[in-house]
Image (tube, rainbow, N blue to C red; front, side):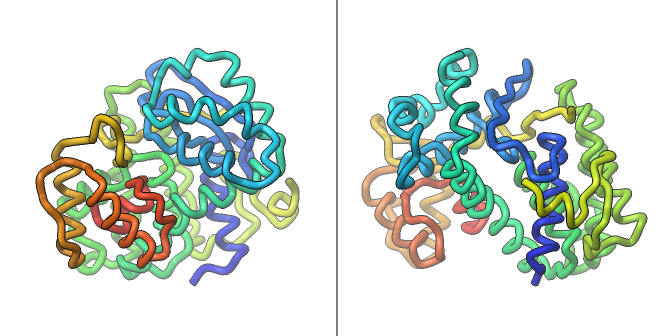
Length: 310
């Protein structure tokens, strides 16, 4: 189990990848042409295109004393529908930037990134038999940046799984495979993010599996002073075909809904497997989320998707 300092160091590494700052940038709003994530926001840059910006703003608006909640709430339906028109909505972007200075927003972001990315990363590491903090950091980076599952499967196919390969062989294989994928991406912006894997390769070469500080990432120091205080390319590697599933009008349909139904059926729930996200499926999903210590909101976001194995 990671110490609090090791957790802070792991998250600082990804914060630096995303914003160039050890503690991230809660007010950062970024839009790059060609980014499949579209508008990105916050400490570790969550994206409009993934639907996760909706989850963050919804959480903030529900928090007591959120001073920008009244102004942000009207945007929630557009965020839920992944309205990419928000990319160019100057008023919305300015509002996000202002809200980043609200301590309630900062707390909401800390909880959000912990719940949606960090906790699934630690669970995934444990399920893989990994014990080293650096391994959890690598997984966390993959979940934040996107396409963790695809790169995990590619590494397994080419080198074998963690159980057969061993942690200190599998992680370097993953880093190498992900770097190759990024370097040869059709998206020119992703090609510029190989620094992420180069930084991990450097830590592996140093033998710093425990993430002992002080360390340096992309020339930015991670030490006790930096962690106690309060540019790289920010581009999402999320698969644009992956969507957050929820009860909507009209109801969502498709193979991803069918996969959710089959997964819940395997968990022992009585499910009509018809590929339609209806009220019955929402109820079963909320029950499963509650049993597994997740927010029972009936939304298949990244945390639910990862832990359910979708």
